[in-house]
Length: 140
Image (tube, rainbow, N blue to C red):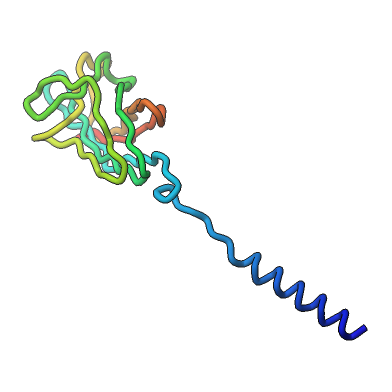
């Protein structure tokens, strides 16, 4: 009886030890896309506004920004450093993409209302694979 009991004890302890050895892979290890927007802001510029933010793709694979939407503008356009329109923007895996004053940025025109400093606006970035991601932006 004692031998049977010690065998069960060893079996239970082994099962508990193996159960504690669980491995959960990260997004980068298994692949996938994980875009995290940060530091959104809107700068008023006359009858339009310019949107700046950072897009950090911590996933293994990239995605493509295809469209921008916001309720405060009739038109949202992605432009390059020289001000020329860009149809879309690739966000590679494992990289940080910034919208900056001297680089790529999003110009909001045909504003539906006046933007007040300090108010918060949501700008929705629509990606080919990830879908819509909202970015909170403070108006400056």
